[in-house]
Length: 203
Image (cartoon, rainbow, N blue to C red; front, side):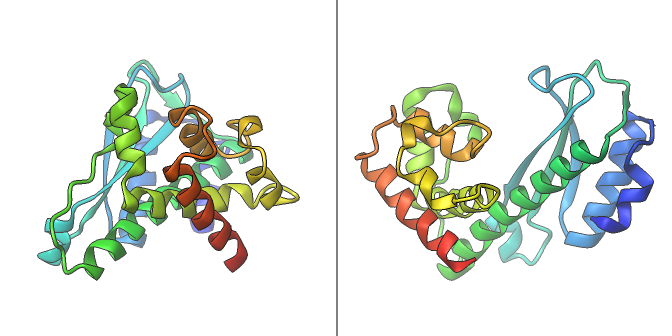
């Protein structure tokens, strides 16, 4: 993303122009489709990202990852400072890595159809547990969480007391811990922790 940094950081953009420039860069560099969306859940003057992988498109050798750039409908202009730019770049990297893991999973089983819920399932506690308990999601989120924990001085120490995990430590691990009621003995959490540990050890 460094080739785009000078053009984007500390420059005031109409939000549509920002999304056009940013989206075109990502689409051309990473072979993904980029679309824009609005949500009142996104803070004013901020930008969030969702991503999806479509195994059917991948099997037909089409562009199969979609990145959704989400802004508040009332945001007219965007200007990102150095920190906000870095956070956005990390979010892009995490989102693409997550979907590329799903791509690898799907290709490994020759595109056999398996039911994977999307993150919209977070509206209901039981559905959220089903979604996060999916083996494919555990595999992908374990990678994301390991990357998030790398910012800590002693990454593995955060895994010893899950009840103290905060959003700033790892937003994805925090989501898992809360979704499974802070139960470190839950089979999903135990499987997740093993995979996080393996990912951290690899780096």
